[in-house]
Amino acid sequence: MATDLAPPPVKAAKVAGHKPNRAQTLWRYRWLYLLLIPGLAYFFVFKYVPMRGLQIAFQDFVPFLGYNGSEWVGFKHFVDLFTGPDFNRLMYNTLFLAFLNIIFVFPAPIIVALMLNELRINVLKRSVQSLIYIPHFLSWTIVASLTYILFSVDYGVLAGWIHEFLGGQKIDYVAQPDWFRSIIILQTLWKTTGWTTIIYLAALAGVSPELYEAARMDGAGRWRQLWHVTLPAIRPTIVVMAILMSGNLLDMSFEQIWLMTNNLNRGTADVFDTFVYYVGINQGAYSYATAVGLFKGVAGVLLIFGSNWLAKRLGQRGLF
Amino acid sequence: MSVNQYRSVGSRIFDAINIAVLVGLGLITLLPLLYVLAGSFASESEIASRTFFLWPEKFVTSTYEYIFATDVFIRALLTTIGVTVVGTVVQVGLTLTMAYPLAKRYLPGRTLALNLVIFTVVFGGGIIPTYLVVRDLGLLNSYWALILPLAINPFYLIIVKSFFQELPEALEEAARIDGATEMGVFWKIVLPLSKPIIATFSLFYAVGIWNDYMSPLLYIDDSSKWTLQVLVRQLTGADAQNALSAMETVFFPTQGLKFAVVVIATLPILCFYPFLQKHFVKGVLIGSVKE
Image (cartoon, rainbow over all chains, first blue to last red; front, side, top):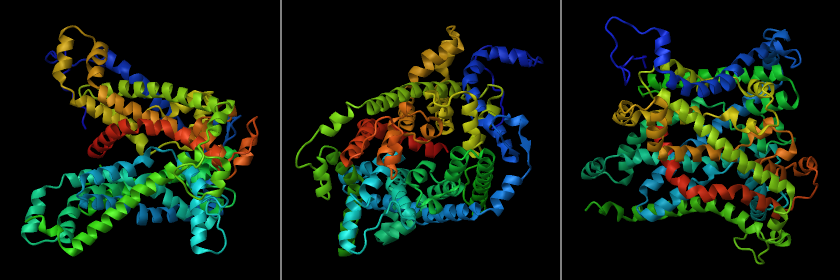
């Protein structure tokens, strides 16, 4: 994207040999620049000023002393993070959830889209499709509340059913650390699968019917059509979604995890973002929390560029 | 002849299973919501004694009567509506005004501004530095803290920008020749042409604010300024009891009350759902194509 100085709409006549100076340019486009200012101000104040605030990761920040008055301590907080007990736990919890996401959450919408694609009763197809993405619009608070309502020991309908069916001791699914990850993955599946399905269905809709026709002429059954026509057709979409996912590998939904965290399961539940909030806001350790956040941010950038590079190496079109 | 492939026994069994699984998925989505709705109209004893139901034996509205007679709920509801309405106007306004100049290919400095925006998608200051900025601005416990820090979503901005670029340049040209200023063109030509996309992103932003839990969690301590999402959390979370003592009103959250609050916080979204459905799908498709 080069700054092409295409002729401006009015007074397009750029006098030969006379290059407009900066002031003239500013004046000519003053209205456009004026419109740009509020938005730029937003990005400056709420995105770039905080980046400057990252310096407190290298300080012992005391709010009272401010950014300039606080003492510089170099990499102390990072050393604390990497040598302390928290890092391994956070990394393990995050990567474990990421792993479960790759195995269960990533393929789910692809499978559902393929199933919907095979459905030839249009009314049913459209109703199922419209139903399963409702949860996308519900907040994590609602999803968490539904989880508590359905799975709590005392009242939970589902917990009750499972207990009746399997017998044994009653299990407190929402409080037990052992069940934390299963609950999180179930929530994510419930909330996101339907929505992501739309993207794959759009890709499927673009597959030319002639390809299927040709495959049938060659004697391909439904499975072979799926394998040799449908899947190759949506492969680029799958790759893009995979890059996006691996770029966000460390980004668990803060709200989701936080809402399901309690004092019993904190050891299993904590991921980087929730830990940053807990240590920074609840305990006031601003500098340490910022260091943890900065580590995650840098790792995230590396993941995005890494997965994009990998996709290109594998002969796919990357994101950028 | 081409229908033959669906006639074999294997094919039919597959179809049957396929339909069963998909209908099952639809039910898994729908039933929890219907159960909560039914439960919000049932008596406490019925919720405790019946395991699962979609219609209360005895239709009771006392939970809702209680809610709409209690300050805490009314305040949270009004707060959320107010913040959502004002916030949507502000956020859509900022997005539109910024997207328009960014859509002008000939504007010097445009690429720089775009790259500054895109960079924030990849990297940011994170939770604590942003919190400190909001605090330094004196926005803690202010409703603006629920609106301004998330004012422009970079993805929406890029999509709106792309939309503006597609608008026929000739129309704007004609207006300029008629003597309209750049502001006039934006206000009288561009915005009226953009009604569908303005509607789409108003809904996007409104749902975002309505559902936001993290901002109030970070920036609002004052329990008189709680939004609905916070209230839902306080009533239904595992530590409901502790949290509730933070409010002046101390009461035991009954199951029915939990159900009803969930319904109230969900209902507006579901009412808009038919519109959302139309626009959002378009939105997500534009997004996935342009990205």
